[in-house]
Length: 335
Image 1: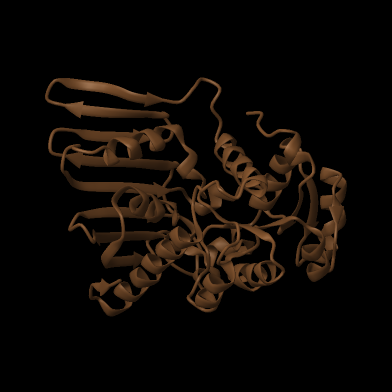
Image 2: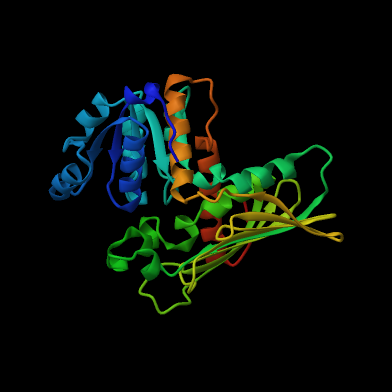
């Protein structure tokens, strides 16, 4: 997917972090015509990043932020808020990967710093054509009453982190923002996007697989929204095959979506209809490129709304924290 224009070529973007997601953002920003500088906490690895992508590197975070037009925070989750705080204090635009954080420390201060600034949360499923179509259907005036929903996402962590020891990844450590609940917070974000604020959370966070993970690898959430709608989200790091799917039941329809098929179906008494289908050339990275291109456009046009706002990211984080509390207490938590 080729996007972006000449306006992006003048944008200087600092990418903080150069793990798998950081490298993806570096490559995509270069494709979109941005000037890229990279900072990472593991200074001894900066040279390899410079050589691999032919980009500038900077060992001094404060200096790197000062010189950039915008900053992408793609570090381990437990480092997000300290870096994001520096970025907003320097009055720079911020793109911060999901989840926003692994706890509530610094969130309220970040909210205040973000007022009037460009902030985007990296929940790229909001750019998926099938899910945009589903959102539009669910938000249509006079649409069927939504009865319930089920979302699921997961894959074995050792298969997901191919090419490196999964023990080394923060994803294996819930105390750093890993574990199924926080690392796969996409599905919580989608539930809020589709169905509005969450009022109550029930959750069971389990360690079910033989993988050496310090945290939950199979998590089940029961969310009740402010509208009264209740739905189920299942997240895992144990599934033998990748899965990412959604089912929404309304009065007259059952909408089914599977990422692997790239098709949104509508099941009714009359039969099954394809509502939306991705193009033959669709790739997963298209979601990341589309989201980043929108962020770059916002640097030139601050009237554009975020794909996923800071408030959206905070809402999803609040649900995840409540889920952790619900699991610990064995009781539902009021959000």
